[in-house]
Amino acid sequence: MDRGIGRSVRLFRAFTLEQTQPEVFYQALARDSRELLGEWTDLTGATMLDVGAGPAEFAHEFRSAGVRYVPIDHDRTVSSVRDGGVVGTAEALPFADASVDLVFSSNLWEHVRRPEHAADEMVRVVRPGGLVFLSYTNWLSPWGGHETSPWHWLGGQRAARRYERRHGHPPKNTIDRTLFRVSIAQGLRWAAGQPDVEVLVARPRYLPDAARHILRVPGLREIVTWNLLLILRRR
Image 1 (tube, rainbow, N blue to C red):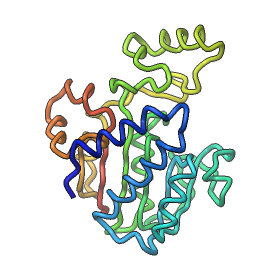
Image 2: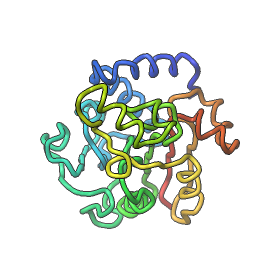
Image 3: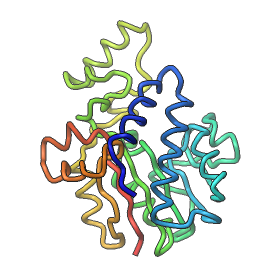
Image 4: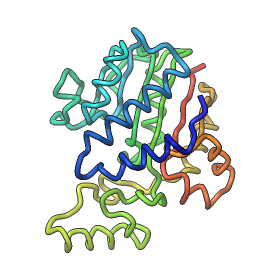
């Protein structure tokens, strides 16, 4: 499937509603994620582990496609976990080796202190021939500071202080505690160094397919990519 500019426009329009109507954005992103994975595997009957699950829209979308969907998050109050999920940490997944068909992780990497270790865990629990879908927002992305963006470009602590002055409370995502400075180069380096996986997809998640060439340009890719998508097959 060729993903062009029309898809990107739809996703970015939905993204502008994340703060005010999050269900609109997450429903659009969940549908797009299901379509992406559907290009590489038959989802019907597959057991999927969603690492860092949160919005219920992903659960609804994948379950409606026939997926045996298992969400895991460290926060027992998130909607997906309350609806039959597992409480646990991405850096020590409470699942056996090669026990699931798919691992899905959307926008978790930037929230864990040891992202490569979490990614190793995702590879560990997926069966040979199974897929790992890993996507994250890098620090130098226009949205790298999340709700403090784009002021994070002037420093994470400064952006957090500005946010607190304007809103009367600290941001949800606290730099170096729940939000970390991950890069595009970091994810690409991790994927290239994994002997147990084949990289099927490496490109900006929200941009047209042609934008994958941006990943070849150090520096530029850290600003323009916005969000890196990796789809990996376990050997």
